[in-house]
Length: 237
Length: 372
Image (cartoon, rainbow over all chains, first blue to last red; front, side, top):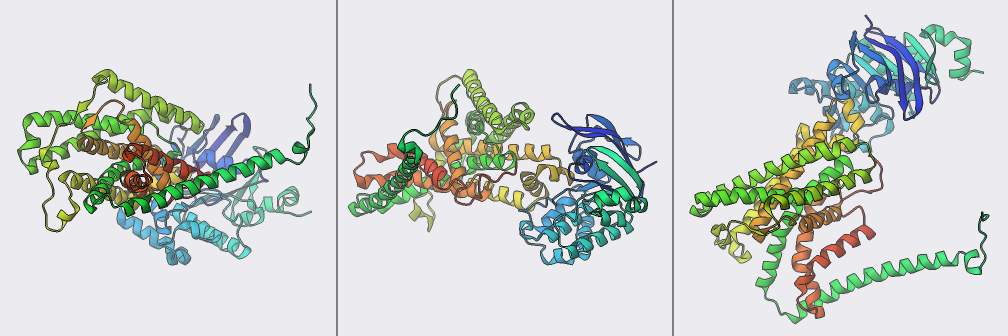
């Protein structure tokens, strides 16, 4: 049984039909990437999985369990955590308070403190700024904080939405290294990226989305080698 | 059908009318500032120069302002917290305060019957504590019902709809209380101990009564507890997170509804407590008692910067002082007869001034920033 199974998802914004029957799976231990242009429905797919949006049709299952009637905030305890697009750190909370909010569903203080230490080991920059209000962090630091915050709840499946957006090239590399090391710790990842080349390099499989539909689904290597994909999404002529 | 109108007169072609209007508005606003500044500065100097009032009078006015300000601050917290989390002005908040005052009143009448309020200072304090707790509980319950029925279904509607719903709740509560208890004025049970002066070595210079100590002390205590709760506790931090970004808070596993409900309950409990303090201070309540204090507290919240918790506290005390000391200090020297009648004018002039010149308030950030 797949860890995450999405079947025939239709999501609307008012009358706009944004997802027109998306189906995909993520197996335990995989990194799966969604690539596609702006407006293809990548973020909408993630937000529907995390139940910020309610689909008009279709199901999302976690290990076979239907999530249709689970409120968004309950997903965290079930093991799904999303790092939203644009990082969305709580700007007026300190770095440490942000991390504690990531562990909101955990009651055990020792586990929370241990999680914070783990986050600081992964991103030493955050430790230096632990008492700082996170609105004052740089974009890269905010991305680190958003990822560290998501890991606080010890997810089994991490939904990452455009983690490299707007970052300097060296930081992009660092973020992708981090994604690989989070994966090495046994977290399955569903990764949405504009930066398709890098995403396909770390993923095992990928889906190409176009105007709310799955255009292609294949192994990452095959997608990266595909002429059409290279032309349309990898910036080759 | 008329085609697009072309400028015909010279004034229209050069945009003169608009420019004159702009200049006119600017002149008016500057004149407004200068007049207010003139009244405050010249009025104060003349009043002080005339020296008609002894130092004791000023001390009494300042202490009175602190007590009044403490009540405003307690109510203002509810406005500011609900605004912070829902971007909505809960116009029924003044009525929640009034309902709290009534709950405290009926509890007080019962306790007065048992003699608890008059037996000894200690028993009086216990009795007042029971009144306050009852008022807090009833006010919180009413606010939770209002939130569930009148606000939650409209959470994704435009803010104006929510505002109108709040005005509806406000009328509903006023006329429910009127229907249940009639339009008459109720005299709060008297607690003789509160009228006695505080006879302690250093404090006697302040000419405090025990009532002032009770009002100011309990208000500051509750505000301190609230501040620690919001800044230190897990649930308080969650409320701040939800205020900033509901979707992301939900992604962290925070129950957004619960955070909103907690905010309403806390704000209402503070208003309920303020209702009892108000009743003990002004001695009379009726079904419309929530309206003016509610608007004044809203002014205090705007003055401090709506959405900002320390701002509401500062704004409340500042408004209380301006209203208490202001009329005598600013207006008496200018020869205004019985200036105390004009204290509401001062309060609402402040509201207008803040809204025109500093809408973000003393401690607030820009209102226009859209985070909702």
